[in-house]
Image 1 (spheres, rainbow, N blue to C red):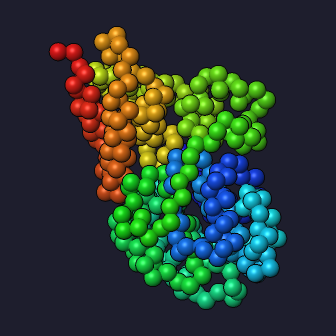
Image 2: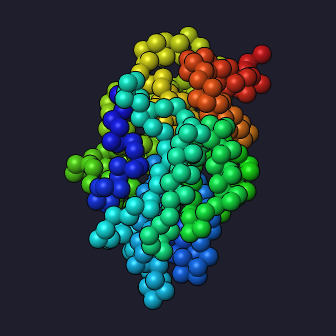
Image 3: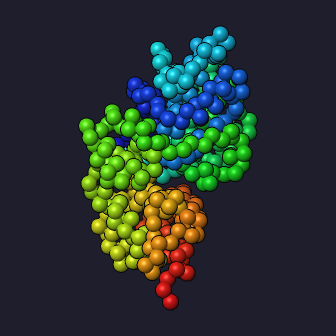
Length: 354
């Protein structure tokens, strides 16, 4: 079961945030926007999951919602350290979060962000502020919005309240309505490098554990994400991950019997609630590694790279969209998984032996 406290961005507002590593180019760009008073109505932070996009969004929100930072004499003194590690004495009431809510009865997170969540957000924005600081809304993640919520958010973006900033966080911007994308200034984020991963994970790992994970190949599989890296401390998860990887290595002859057995033995991973550990999350991660040639396929005793990266990238986009739509319309995850496997099987059909 997922612990609510570990997956809610709002709860992190009350905890002492750790120093934010990496993403210098993105932070420099944001700093320039602040210093030159060119803050847009909406930013879209997009890139791989678990690399610090939401943490950076929260840090930016803390700075902009603090009235002291917005005084003209302080604008030119805002530094990279202020963004990486905001040291503010008071907690702002002008930071709002839009994310999937926790269902206490089901002990699960809701599958989508609903229109009611956006309406509540609009109500909060309508309340007058007692200071001149920004009101900042963080949507995490934007692809969790259902269609009604997306259209409602679009109206807010089209006519935003004064001194309001939306920071939309996305792991897959292709799943977001084009009309929403057009209203945002986009900031792309990349994987964290090995040094950043090592620095961040020092607070979580025991001595030599990082090097052990590196030796086991976890640095490649984690896609530059600390959250995904830490998953590889779970031996049961490692076994599951390697079995999923084995399914792809069987291509172009996808072993359906093996897939069914794997699903039957690992039902707990057939969930949408932990995107990193879910079967779909692992499948998408492996496809991403295949697209980047980090996993090599051998067809008929020959190493094949030509076209594989393009096929894998296309499959990643297809299955990401399929997963998002199945969550919104509450389609059985098992059925969606087998549909995804059919799509993969068809994509590699031409490589099968005659």
